Image (cartoon, rainbow, N blue to C red):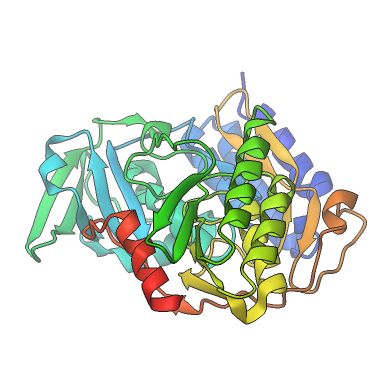
Length: 392
């Protein structure tokens, strides 16, 4: 079976299905299609995937991208972005004693230079590129494509530990694992790629004055468990209406924001006097961003946004779905509908149930910058209590 068969659904997304390509220069699209077609005809699998990543990234839309994780092998190293730095957080190699460490360079090249070169392969905002980009550092074929693989049989890493000491280590390029074992499709930024969240809502008491809700995900294949958890959380919020509320949507990659509206209503009703803080990071995406946007619109200055810029802006294309490419094994994520929470306007692609909730948020500024690194072992409850003490 030919990789050319994998190119056909990609072309359909670019030329017909996905509205995020409407403003892209057709000459750029055609040039990238020719590159992908060339690699497909040569049956050059990883080069084809890299050219397809570059083609789909032209949309500038983070939801629209090629996800190679199930189709490629990488070195057994998990790199994750914290702030503007990249860290080695987990490994299946003898380097385990070096994790966590800050990544300084690969094959003699500084991390920042590789990130700049890899930007054309990655979709979306600079923050989303920081989320999905660390995979590149463990993928020898991508490093070679970008011109940063001077060694035929190994990849060299320059690392810095928590004590400031620097280490140079090498990993054999043949020592690989399936990428999805180290890098999930929906990258959440946790040390363990196969994280196991405790349901959809975790409730933490913060002394007598505060209540914290951790919301790890809004994606619910069962279509019932999330709604039940949201209803219970809404009841708890209303019962504690005189408490300062902390909501943690860090690493929440999205799902169904409509299912969270009962909780948004409860928060709106219950925090008018005491206020509310929401914790966000670059791994906060899609429906979780919408959740924060609606709270900002409703609560105004009563809501304090703590953390770092989220993974997308307020205007993006979403909905759509996934296409499994049968020959390469990669996945195409495509979009079909406009979400404009910046101006609150719709077009013919915006679903009616979403259009009914759209509000003009204008911007989501971070009120208080804060992010952790793998060197920070502060328990979540301590962080929640600190926010209550400082903001309530």
